Length: 594
Image (cartoon, rainbow, N blue to C red):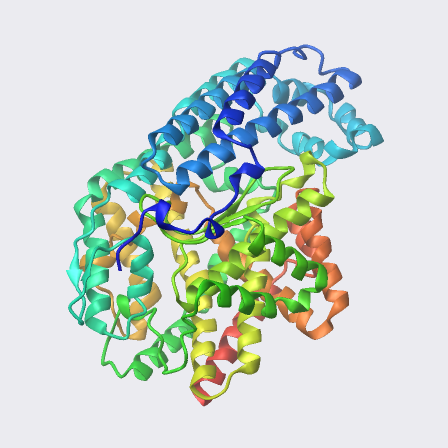
């Protein structure tokens, strides 16, 4: 169970970043051209109260941003292949500096546009010549009160040189510098823990192995908790600064307004989950009984509770399973999956220095990419389906929208990914019986637990952390650990779980998404939306698929709440939340009867 070097992995399991930029040398040439282009970024200053000046400026800004996007995505993904390669660390740093430099030169655009009358901006938004920018202009109108003067915007743009350093420092620590204690498993094998191996070991049928992995993981964060807390607190205070400067009510208001989503959706989610915690407790009591334990520990929450197959298959077979499961989405979708599997879209295996976890990313005009750290677990099969959902969403958006409308909001970013997961588990359940069916039912419930309940728990934590900072209350490693401990007790202890206070209180310190504030709740709303969409597809077939594709193709062309309505989901109403909880309860019922 040792992690290999990147050179030991077959090229067919590596992504093909040459589709973005042909080589590092070509990247340097693109960098020079973009830098040169950026020197003229101030040419439209003072001309944005005139229709033609606005149009030409917006087109120029698009050209510049497309080039910057290619530069950054290529360099960052090369770095993610092996974070220890200094060349790519430097390339990322250089393009970040260029981004800041150019953002300073273009900082006048939003203030000048916002200074125009609402009537003028609305006339532009309704002009066919500005069709690609209609939603951008609508958002400018909505956010006029949060746009500062040109000099203030330039000053804020300069803070980009360091505003991301809290996240960057945590990423370097979490991917390179963190030290996990090694240990021997029950069969005598020496294990040097990594993020990827941790997920595997938590599913080990041997409880002592799970416990050792758990203690090694959280012991490492405990040993560095003051450093990690300083990074996170700094990031929170940065968020407060930007919220106050831009005259938002609070950080949550800034985050939701930034995506054109009502803050009521956030509060509705928290209220719904807290009301339905008894359902979570009921399932966890079943899990404790099924495992035969008097008391569960936090490291018992991922191990399969039945003797059903855990689907620990090779990568190629996992891809075939995913493709079969997604067949309800039609032939076109299946053909795109073949491209993803066979044409260098995916980086498959863990290697030394590689970024942990998984993601889908890319840039406009190039097919999307997927980073995996594949292990032979059921969870990793679902990760393939999940990340390809992201990739296909990006593909459809980019193919059907102009650049200004192609990028969908983060609020809907987890919907397509979790539609794929739901279709996968429904597909597997349709073929299962006996212990395997029980296994899959519990897997669906654990998907609920980790994606809806757990991410909402995380959302509550970051809400409390930002509230403390906004109210000027003291923050420290101990205070943050205590906040998390209490939340963990609320979510789990009632169901008969030992809270494992000495270790689980540090769990917040290993969540990278916390450095992108108020992101995690979208996993919860994403699964809730996905359940509704997937059920509609399975019940109504082609008509539902076409509605879903309208959602995929819409990109960022309107409010994400309105885009979801294209697929039949209205998160401003209670129905989706109630339907999701009903599905969870029905699944618990079915598992208890199985």
